[in-house]
Amino acid sequence: MTLIVQKYGGTSVGTIDKIKNVAKKILAAQAAGQQVIAVVSAMGQSTDALIAKIKKLSPVCDPREYDALLSVGENESAALLAQAIIAQGGRAVSLTGWQAGIRTEDNHNKCKIIDVDAQRIKRELRAGKIVIVTGFQGLNSRGDVTTIGRGGSDTSAVVIAAALQAEVCEIYTDVDGVYTTDPRLLPEARLLSAISHEEMLELASLGAGVMHPRAVECAKVNNMTIAVKHSHKAGKGTLITMAGEKLNTVSGVAADDDVAKIGLLHVPDVPGMAAELFGALAGAKINVDVIVQSIHEEARKNDISFTVSNDDYARALELTEAKARGWDGCRVAGDTDVAKVSVVGIGMASAPGVAARMFAALGREKINIQMISTSEIKISCIIEKKELKRAVKSIHGEFGLDKC
Ligand code: ADP
Ligand code: ASP
Ligand code: MG
Image 1: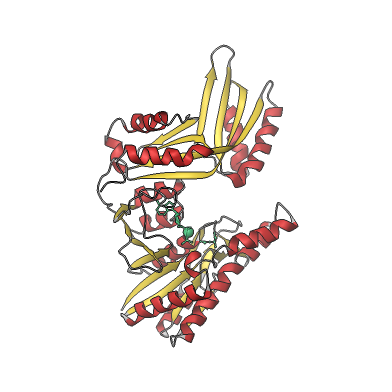
Image 2: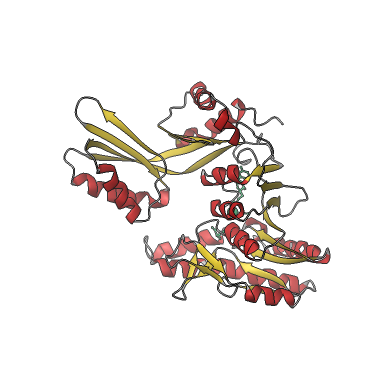
């Protein structure tokens, strides 16, 4: 008997009818001789609804209580799915993160999973049950419920699959697999039959919401294959594996509108300033993404610009303004009207001219590039938010991603 882990996202379990369908699918896998662990997200937009409720009480919430509330969404869908399986004649048990032995770091809201004590899951599997585990949550060393970041159920599934050495981890979602870009943004996006862990990790980190970046990271470390498929349609989907489709110069385009820009202008050009600013941001656990420093020729001054996620924007702006007050002549400018467009491809490491082609595609559309950041396998540009769709279309066409 092979063991598989299946993960069903929010839209896949968004209604009772969809939950019944998922139950049928899981029972079919069991009937085909597989032991199944299913990891579930909260139903539809229910996590958003929980956030909206708690934010009515306070815009800045107590992190522990925030997690205690947000974990409720997954508890609901897991119990309903187990009940749906039982109602269809199967044997199932739902386990919350702590019952499933998922241990996390002590901090709240975006913490990492440390390990899985899989004794209970194994016991239930041995008893012949289908095990339904809540995604997105775990327990810290203080015995408190934690959550692991938006979209984190993918990571719960991969971590459990790795801990139990499952044959494969299947991610069931509301699209047919991983496309060359978000198919909801660009209808001509092409479904990829396979993609490497490395490229998927880069795409996910750059905003391709189809996979949680930490899930891909965990799969890569454990050399585990992930299959991304549609939850209610047949199809082969996309395999995320050690080797991808082929060594494309560009495999995909990622769009991210969860970006805000902060500029610190007229910073004295002396050692230690950047360390002080970014040290303060790091101390507040704010993830900084693109950083650009430009020099004023005449007066030993610099401008430092950087981007953060929208969630971190208010706090980052506050901290940057506090620093600027201590530095003579310094001022701060914030901009939430920006977005990031990126190209990713392992082949670009050995193919010159990718950046030039990307910039030309943006130039043709008269889209201004505000910031640029590169690595061996990606190039990102910060642009105006309203230009994002046009930018993706132009770059996607430039690299012929719509053609096989
Ligand atoms: P789930 O609730 O199943 O976790 P998500 O909303 O988190 O689903 O992820 C699926 C969505 O990811 C799709 O509906 C699609 O709009 C978006 N997406 C972004 N980039 C891509 C991509 N490159 N390929 C496929 N889907 C993508
Ligand atoms: N329910 C959580 C969210 O909406 C986790 C997930 O869906 O993966 O972010
Ligand atoms: Mg998701």
